[in-house]
Length: 108
Image (cartoon, rainbow, N blue to C red; front, side):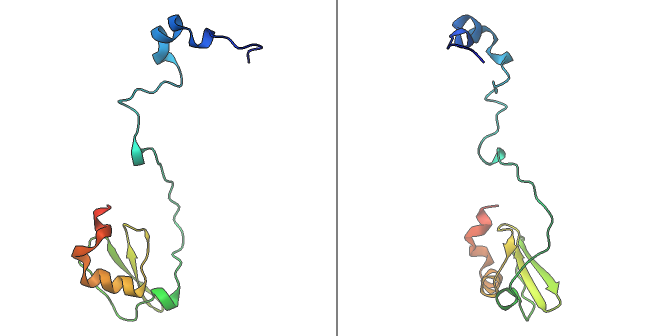
């Protein structure tokens, strides 16, 4: 640390000649932007759901490529890969009937 403030760190002779050697310099062409910056670490975990809300007594089918039906001991549960969560019974029925009009499909 400096005892007193100094302009040596930002002197034009130093900054304009060797700025690319600075450890904090990032070339704009190589810099990640938007969601590329976010690096999510996914942890596999047990799927948790509420039986009264999420369990489907009958098998529901959807043409959506992001819809996944999983069998459990008490019935079926519907999973949306775009949302990354279990769907409620009513959402699963809507996905089955109106999958082409689903606004969430455009997110992926």
